[in-house]
Image 1 (tube, rainbow, N blue to C red):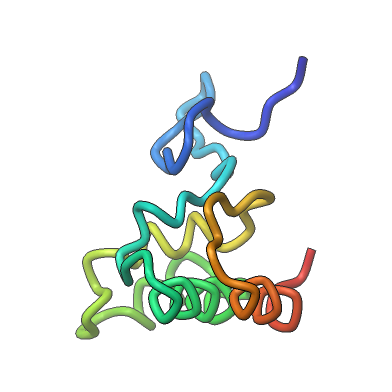
Image 2 (image 1 turned 120 degrees about the horizontal axis):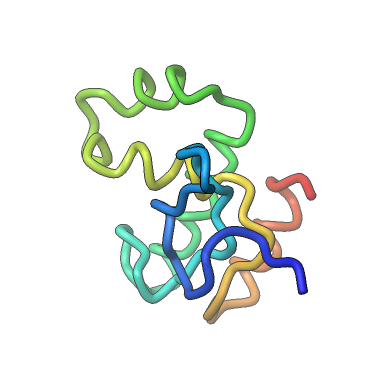
Length: 102
């Protein structure tokens, strides 16, 4: 069967046999740098929306000097995850539907 990225949740460092990065298979809200509460989950969705059209270089520049500078690559690789696990609030689902493109 086909798979999208590496098996297991929140693994963003997978590469194919040629050393090229694989897309992230999912996002695990329980590992969210903004925290697991409603506000942290909402912030994560907003981060996905910010980077969804950015190139890698644009994402790096965008996060430089911010509180999320160490996580820029995490946000960049997670920008188009097909699955977001453990969303605990209806408001987060609503915001994701409003901001994120399929």
